[in-house]
Image (tube, rainbow, N blue to C red; front, top):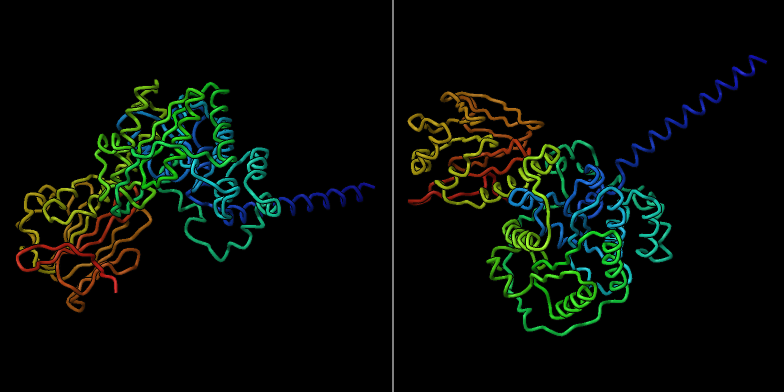
Length: 487
């Protein structure tokens, strides 16, 4: 009898072990194959990582929220601990359920809703947006309700049993599917905001002349009201805004209706699409937009500051700067503002001003002086000396590495060096047998065959290679060009 019991015990043990292994394997597969869209799913995933009741300002909406409301500026300039919980082309019904989910862990002192959802006229979003705006919700009951109103009946179970949608994603594997990708400060301190570094000139709209209203799509109006009513029910102040973009006449009429509905509830509504705000923000339509819908790294700062000033007039939001429990917002701000500075560096074409902008402790700089060194760098002697370089030692055929205020440079004619920068490797070599300089980033050549002065800049905080560029002497001027020109 004891033998039988022992056999049954061993059999049960084996079954439990197999089930455990299967569960762990399935969990690993799900972790790799599941959707990780930055414009929807990751925003709500990272909300769960915030300490309970740490978010003072919760910003809701579509990409008009997560590309235009700069959480780094809100903290750095105003001390506001803000988080953007939004999704690409997010309709109000998805915003409503995102808000329901957020309120399980957060009690914001203010909710800011971007009103772009007022312009939506369709019963359902496209497949990609349904995924992005629902599948990140952790609470099964809330996700179920969100999917019921978001997906056509014949597709409902495909979204509910989401493995049907992602099980074949192995053909799309990329760096973002693995944990290492999320160890950068961008993700580690993520607050839902993503900077758009594109610049495209736009035609300035004239919304002031449009004063009439157009009814909202019934489903959009239903959930617009639900959002307002939920905020009132939870006794959380609400501010409805519309960020600047190249809107058309029909959209402006819908925003006029949205304001009328907000007025019914006594909720403030600010449309920043007006001459008044364009002028007060000093919005430059030739420089401040990434596309017709989104502000870029210059425009979002102007809009965010205007928004913050309006918030300060109406609401009492605490200043969290210097508070230890809000260190992640401090680091997030450092990341956002640092990457913005990196973009300004990329856009700088004046050699002297360029080297002035390099005076940042977080930069590791490599200067490879191939030829015309005196001509190219002669005009920025003061800037170079500010970086720690002895300009009297400038020579063609040298490589200077500036790191943490220390300058190291190769001897003449022969050198070989490898620099480890976090998980990256910068290597260069040149010898009598190899007259041409080889400079590589993670094994990829960063120097073309053309003469000049090559500069590589690595941001040790954001952990990104900011750029590789080449200065060359052309006529009587120094010209900035890509290190390796596209063919």
